[in-house]
Structures are given as structure tokens and as C-alpha cells.
Image 1 (spheres, one colour):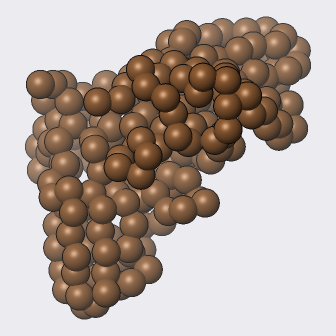
Image 2 (cartoon, each protein chain N blue to C red; image 1 turned 90 degrees about the vertical axis):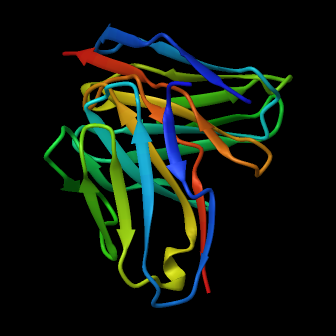
Length: 110
Length: 113
């Protein structure tokens, strides 16, 4: 079955620094989702990538899906305390099921 | 195998019927969650249990009830199913609330007609 791995497990950065979170699949991805969990709330949908080489940005967050569609990265530019939380990648296994990574915990120090 | 087990995997209900989705984890996790996933909307939190004996509402709790039966089990009940509850439901667990080690179940595809 498809599995997703995320790295790093946790990350502590100084405010203003850039950072990258990676999500790697054992199989070719059909749809790759990025979520953020806000403290005390559920998962917030950030963006979805489907095409090899696709890149999407929202505010200071950019997500990319590699050409082979097995790896995605989430890049945050000039991090802020509001970016802190748990980042989770999820994948659509060609409509059969959804799988999720374990998450990456981000802390941003002011 | 260690993990999160959800039952059933598929279910079709008539409007007004009730049912309970079961979720069990064998990883000694403290926190458990119920999410629904709808096209274009991502995962939305229905209810969660940060620790045994506690449950809290998430973003979309209306029409659902939960029971944290013990540390292993967290069930989701639909008392009177509605077509708007047609969705894919995911149970997840975590060692502790807001930790990074989520484990998700394989999902329950529910259709309400």
C-alpha cells in the first residue's frame, strides 16, 4: 500500500527564516494535498497538486510536486509565528483511498 | 499490524437511518480524531478526543455524536443520516494532541440516499 513519509518530524526556526518540509511517497501520486493544523482546531486545507512539476503558491507558502510525482515540498518564505503548527501531506491513491503522512511540527521563534 | 482500524469500509444508508462508525487503534495513542473529507474542501474535523475520557467538538460537529469508549476506541454516530453527510470519513490517532505522529485509518466511504 502507498505510504507517505515526511521530513523533518519537527522544525524550529527563527522568525524571518525560510524553511522546507518534504513529503515522499512510495508510489506515484495522483493528487497530493497539504494541510496545516492550527492549535486547537482541525486541519486546514492549503493546496493540492496533481501534475508532475506543478507548483502552487499562497501568500508565503509554495508547494511543488516533482516530475515523477513521488515527492512534494512545502516551502515557507520569511516565516512568521502565525506559520507555526502541524503540516500534514495527504495523497489520493487514484480514488481508492487516501493516505496521510505523520506530519511535521513547526515552531517559529519570535 | 499496528495502526488505526476503521469499520465499515463502505456503507449506504437511507435518509433518517442511524449508524455508528467504529475506530480502534493499538498504538497506545492518547488522542483520537474523526474527520470527513469532501471534494474540494479537504479534511474537516468533526470531533476529537485529546485524551481518554474527554471529547470536544471540531469544525463540523452537527449531526454527529462520539464516544471515547476506552483508550483504544473512538466511535462516531450518525443519529439520523442526511444526504449532506455523504462523505469519506477518516479516523486518526496521535500520541498526544498536536504532536506530529498522526496515524490515519483507511477511511469509510458513506453514501446517504
